[in-house]
Image (tube, rainbow, N blue to C red; front, top):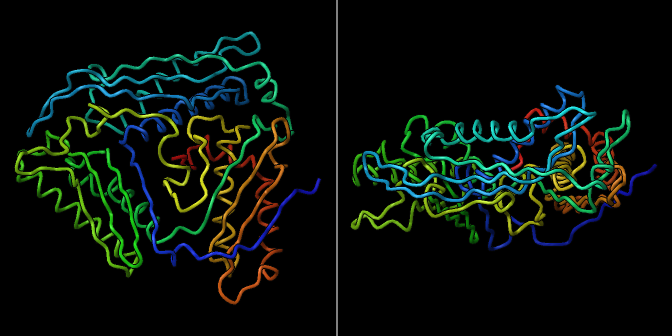
Length: 400
């Protein structure tokens, strides 16, 4: 069956030429990102358990989790947790198949523990964390839509849509690069830099302002003087990363709520604000491209925790982003591209009700000149939509 792929040209000001652009990222230790990461780690663990036991991935969705803040008393040189962080695991999972009981709750709790320890190594899991698992089972009709069928393309679990765009703007690139650099390199050198970081980017014409909130781990910071030094290091390092991606003016502001004289600063015991006063929910933070981009079309769906077999809220968000990036990489003449994929519940996921592609051609390029190449890529990606499932289970695609 021929797919309904609709390609149209956009007539609008390119984002890089618009005056105002806003971009945000909540990094790995932010409570909302913690909730996303826990949800996705549980889904991956369930997928592997189901596949090892039965050779197929069974129905589940773990995209409803919560992180409830504890209470702490940080102080320079090392404070302590007073009340544990509380994590609620809810959603749905298959707990019995072909008469065999499946330890889905135990798998979920173990996966959550492993993920939290990986992200927050300063957190004492025995004393400072409470996990409450309330996984239910899915509704009969949705489980019927999900039923594994050999050789057949899965059927959509919902009437929903996914969106994606490419390429990244300079601000989007700077924020992702800054986040990755801090997580992979800078923290190894300066363990006082916590995992809870939020980066907000504003571009006003040719001036980029980055406002960074970064938790500092108290046991690695002896006094207010050293704390101030870390603020300087963050400012310097993030500015250097930004300058690699832009010739625009860049200004970085770190922990602007601090009152250095009063020693009222973003000091934590564990590296996250979830230890006291800041809760988190799945789907309330980054989209699947790792950013929050109010200048771009976005889906409100939580990508993390949804099953990677037929849940459109996961698959189509990831696929639309992949399609946009592939087209921009392989087809010359695209200034910007936006992809929207819409499903109908019960229909094969490789046959969306519509695959809407909006292209802003570069100056001097006509849509008719690149239409066929774009059509071919979109059709191929939809035909191979199940590859998204494999990449998600293997952890090759990020969902937040």
